[in-house]
Image 1 (cartoon, rainbow, N blue to C red):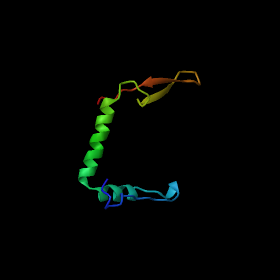
Image 2 (image 1 turned 45 degrees about the horizontal axis):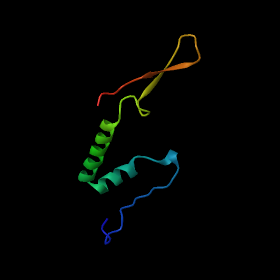
Image 3 (image 1 turned 180 degrees about the horizontal axis):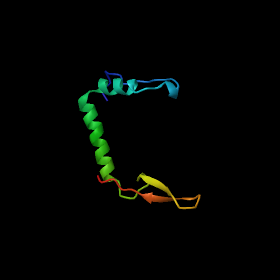
Image 4 (image 1 turned 30 degrees about the horizontal axis):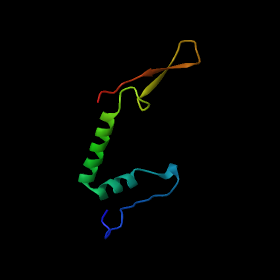
Length: 79
């Protein structure tokens, strides 16, 4: 990090019920398109490096007929 510039910090405090997307929009607009692209690309690389069936795989609960228990069914999203 360049020592002549302070790190970029944005904070927002408030009640969850009062939060909207305005802070997120202002944050990403301040960073600019290059930072948005870089962050999106990092997410793509990370998602592609995860093995299928990991703990972050989407799951859907489907109740059994006449049973109060639920069964987990895996849903794989193509990458």
